[in-house]
Length: 121
Image (tube, rainbow, N blue to C red; front, side, top):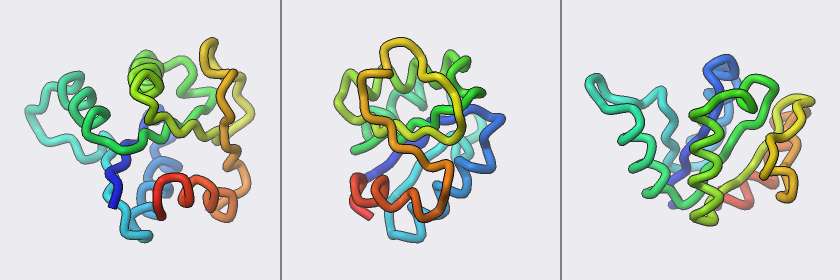
């Protein structure tokens, strides 16, 4: 099964957790920073996990568009052709990400079915 990284803003932790649980329920291996081990070097761990992932689901929201970590993670994932952008609220996408189709999951869980299909669930 593909390994999936979830990028999100801390303010959207509940949605990230719900998506992680849904993906895991479909037998997909999921990693998000909730799984960071004590003493890990945050930036090193994130880069390694993104590089190991088959897909990087980025949860775009009015919170995450201002997060330097989320922007870095999304940029790195896009450069590796692993980005699966998902909109979880009415945010305006950051510059550089508006050319990609962004799946809208404001009505969920049923709206997550195309995302599941994309990542192998």
